[in-house]
Length: 419
Image (tube, rainbow, N blue to C red; front, top):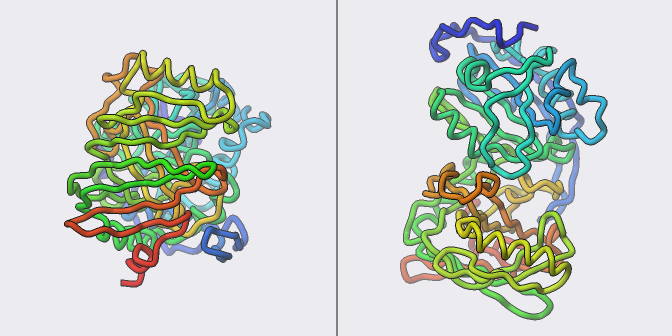
């Protein structure tokens, strides 16, 4: 395949010739049935052609590439990472997307390119990406010059989310794309097998129900005790992650999608934290003025909580509340937050970087670049079984509505989908 370093890139991307093709399904898996929070659901088989056509319409005439992360990006040479058992996400990118594109999907969709590149793993969610990467020949490349300015569509499949930095690069260099971190078989056969026109329509119904809310309160129950976090929204427009990246304007779709979210203007109260890298440890986080100002050990490892506390002291913006998210899809538990936070009945609160969501917190505001992450704190009964979300209550125009009760959408919230 032609290497990106030799591609002629003087033709404006948006003006490249396009052609129409007759599409036939490129089913790479069998249909699957999974248990969700709402019961059993049958999902259609994964269809790469349908997914890309639906998400990126118009797609014909575009040049596409894949981007993965590797702890040792020199493993990109001759796809050496395929021999590394620890690289399951990257293998899935190769087997499903790289091979799928090059074995028929590009021809059907009128795409060109199909190359794969790797960059060094950032080690954190939504941290800025390095400037350089590697191609399949093992050559070091400049990502801006040989990827961002060359390709119309960039599909990023990685261990750590790259949504925030790729969104910024998309706006700067003019490409579209998607981020699919944590990809696994459950995600492939459920969250990526659905029709995103339907996902978008359902997310819009839920968004209209909660948009312009004044406040949302989340009540958590741990060991018989209740704690409440109040998020001040001040009638802002709710936003949605719906998976569609239509038109030619620069944009990034986070897949699987299915979420309604706000960037709170403030927050106060107490909410729990089950640590991602130490799940046996749970702490209570005290929030004042929109930031976590202190943490208190409830159970587990005191050293984990102390390290968190020291980070908050040395780099206070790491504790800023940057998002309130509500899932909108009926999905099975995958073990990866990119899908599990999109499950209706779940809620997540994020800290840190928020510029990709329309917030004000950008990487330069952090004391250390390694802290400039966007970290979702997801509450899901399969992930945080010791923590019950007893209630999510919305206040809007003098009225109150319960949105979630014990990890189930309320009758009112679920009823929005029937409108």
